[in-house]
Each structure stands twice: as structure tokens, then as C-alpha cells.
Amino acid sequence: MRDLRATVSSVEPHPLPYFTLHLEIAEDFLPVVPGQFVMVEVGERLEPYLRRPFSVHDLRVAGSRVEIDLLGKVIGRGTHLLSTASPGSILRVLGPLGRGFEVQPHDRVALVAGGVGSAALLLLGRQLADRRIPFDFYYGGRSSIDLPCRSDFEEAATASGGSCIVTTEDGSEGREGLVTGPLGEALEQGAYGFLYACGPMGLLAALAGLARDHGVAGEAALEAPMGCGYGACLGCAVPHVDGHFALCCKDGPVFRFDEVRW
Amino acid sequence: MTEPDLSTRVGPLELPNPVLTASGTFGYGLEFSHLGSLAKLGGIVTKGLSLEPRKGNPGPRICETRGGMLNSIGLQNIGIEAFLVDVLPGLRQYPARVVLNLFGTSIDEYRQLARRAEPIPEVAGVELNVSCPNVERGGIEFGHDPEILAKLVAAVRQETTKPLIVKLSPNVAAPHELGEAAREGGADILSCINTVVGMAIDARTRRPLLHTVRGGLSGPAIKPIALRIVFDVARKVGLPVIGIGGIETASDVIEFLLAGASAVQIGTALFRDPATPERILDGLRSYLRESGIAKVSELVGAVELPSDT
Image 1 (tube, rainbow over the protein chains, first blue to last red):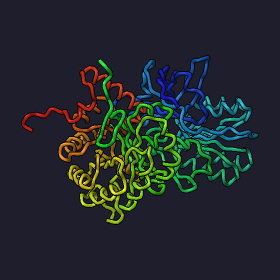
Image 2 (cartoon, chains in turn brown, red):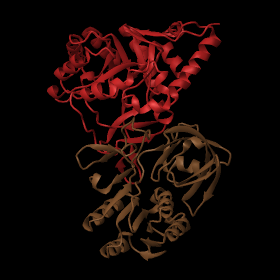
Image 3 (cartoon, one colour):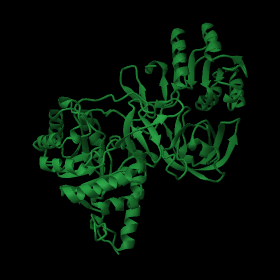
Image 4 (cartoon, rainbow over the protein chains, first blue to last red):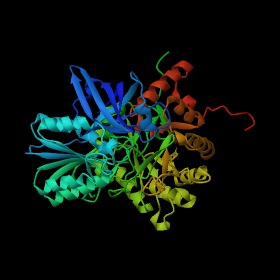
């Protein structure tokens, strides 16, 4: 974990409210494990005061030049400022932080994302493809705009020998309904040896239930309000099955399904 | 000129410099070992420690507010035993002095905690968190009743020869009266302030942003309140004071010293910038050099008041 100065290369707009922040960062940032995150300092002002957590969405390394992508959704002032950052501006980036996904050998796995939760899964998808583990990418959103960077996920899934399955709650894209629909059917067929997921807590809880019902293990990257990102403030409590509160930032953000009291 | 002297004496507590980290904002210290701050700090005040480990409150435990944040962690901690056995040895290599922040739900629990810390040479002092409900007295906070506070401090005083710090709550009409009670009980030092009780609501969902509804406000938003209380307590109580509340720059530190604090604790600013203590110390050295001040202690209480106050 290091606190580095990153330079904004560009901000790539997606249909609102989504954006990708491309940052050039020192080589010291490496290595990074899929599922790990960074805390980004936003602006010089009192609001927002705290840094904002982002999954490391993508990574490009060319010699000593390292670029990371952060996929964001404009929710408040902090994310608005980041979505309008000027190329060349400097942001302090603390990371990489937390426990990432563990890639295990399986015949076929499923990656499941709800909306911008997909940000935690692209690096993982690339790593699975490199290790020749085919995966299907289940991408669920409220509507067609809530599927940012969809083509990147399609490409990665295809490269691994899998495919991308899209669902929207309003039926504006892909199959109407929740990702748990098609995923449940595939699990019924015994299609996957492992699940990887990121998205809203409600979705993750439903996935953990589905996985358990089908005797499949999995991991999920969780979200919680974070003050520091490295275990000092104890703000990001996640209820653990053994009764204590784990810290999302330090014990996670990736937890095995059976570690969390959903 | 020679390097300014940052060494600081706060009553019986001697520090390499006046910058400590506040309880609950620095974990147990080692969380920051990667970030370099540890080697430069004057002292570390640990996360509040109780006799037994505590699991804390369900989330959401924190939320951001303008110029700060609310927290309601619920005193989650690993317990004093685990701290002394598993964590403290790892802090030995650093010059920062280690102050244990202690809390209990009865006077006897505080006594036992102080007794446990007494023989440990690496413990430079104890700070009592008195913003906890007293279960023997219907849940009123120890720090809200001068009589109970004096009793509590006197009981702990019997158990410890270490510098005894009492951390005052700002959530009372006259904090200096509680400071006087702590002095009567035998406190050596007062630290002010603990967080200010606050609340936040999400207008969209109509729900409070914290699970426990109320939480403790910290960050730059509370600095003027903290400065006023440090000023009052330092003038009226006659014990050395450690200032806490929204400090994030060298200028903030200087203001607290001028108001009467002998040292300061940095809290919420660490979350935004873990390197805050180094940045502050560099700024403090520059200020002293440029102002021709040889010793940082010359600033303590040196605020220049209008002649008619």
C-alpha cells in the first residue's frame, strides 16, 4: 500500500451517470490483485472531506508506464468532481488496498455484476482468460444505461471461451428481470464450479443463497461506507458468520460467500 | 539558526514532539507502519481498549458530513490483553510514545484496566475515555457528571503511577467544570475534545445515515468548538491540556498551542491523508524557524487577547 500521486490522462464518458477515469500512476503501485481497490483524494475542499473508494477496474502496463482505470458512477459531489477532472490534474491515490479475488482452477466459472459493481470484475476476467479458465459474464442493470463498459466484458468473456449474458429490470436490454434468473437456470444445469460477484448487497445475498442451494462456492467483493480504507477507522463493518464484524477494507473487500452473515 | 526544539513536556508526559494521533483514528498503530508516519510521531493514542474484546455496532457506522464525518463504531476493539501481547511489541521499535485509551462500563472496569497497564514499561500513559455510559448509574456518561467523574478518576489514580489523561466530552454546558472534577480526582492532563454528538439524515430515503441514528462528529467542522474548549479548560482548570478537534495543518496546531494546549492529537485528517503528521511537523519546524522561536513550548498559551477581556 502506497500513497501515490496519479495524473489524470482522461475521463471517458459513458451514458450518464457513469464514467471511467484513466490515471497514470508510478510503477510502485504494482502488483495489484483483481478485486483490490484504491482510495482517491477528491479536490482540496472540505466537501468531500474523505477519500472515495474505487475498485481497480483495469490496468495497462507498458514498460515503466502504468495506467489504471477507475469505473465510477456520479452519486454526489465527490464523484461529480472526479467525472469532470481535467487531463493533467493530479490526484492522490492510496492503494492497492484490501484482499482481492483468489483465482482457482475450474472448468468454467461465472462472473456476476450488478451495475457499476462490474468494476471489480474486469481484471479478474482478464486473469481468468490468461489462465484459460472460461467464464460467462452475467451483467445485470436497472436499465440499458446501467451496463457501463459492457463491450469490454463481452470481449473478455469471449476471449476466455465464454459469453456475456445481459439482464435489465426494465427489459430495455437483454433479458428482462434480474441476473439471478438466467444464472439460476445455468446453476441448475451444473454449469459452474465457482461464482465471482460484485454489486449491491441485496444482489450478493441472493447470489450467496443461490450458490449455497446448488452447492457451489464463490467470492463477492462487498461495499461499505469507508473512512480510511486501511483498517484504522473501523467504519466499514461487515457482519461475519462467526458473530464479529469484519472490516470491508482490510478483511475484504472480497469475502467468500460463506464468510458473510447476509 | 539551529533546528527548533520540538520536544514537549505535558505534565509528567515527555514527548519527542507535540503531535500525537487521536484514539480511534490510528488503529493500534501498526496499520500505519507502511505509510512512514510512525517513525516521526510524538505519540500514539490507541483505539479505546476494554477488558474484553467488543464487536461494535452494525453498519452503517460512519457517514461523511460537510467538513467532517460522523461515526458510531461502538467501541469495537480487541481488548487490552490482545493489545498488550500481540500489538504493543511491534510498536517498540518506534520513538513515538504509546498512550493507552481505556474505557469501561463501571468504575471497577476502569480500575482493572489501569492496573493491567501499570507494570508495562512501554505504556507511556493512559487516557480515559469517559464518554461511555455508566451501567451502574442508569447509563449516564461518566464524563457528564462531575461527582461521578471525580470518583472514577480518583479510583484509577490509585492504580496507576503513569501520566493520567482524562479526555473531556464537549457535549456538556461547561466542560471546564468536568475538567476541574478530573483534576480533583488526580488527573495529570486533560485532552479536549472528544467528538461532538450529531446526526445526519438522507433526504431521499428519509432514513438516518447511521445505524445508531446519533454519532460523533469529527473533522475540521468541529475545530472552533475544540479551540474554545481548550482555551477555557487551559485557563480555568490549571492542568496541562492536549488539544484535539479538526486539526490538519501546522497552522491548526499553532492555534491550539496558542489557545493553551501543550500538545495535540490528529484524528480524522489521517483518513484523508495518512501523512498528515509529517506534513504538520515540517510546517511547524518552518514556522518556528521563520519566527525565530527556539522551542515549540514558547507558543503554549501565548494567544494575545484584547485588553478588555
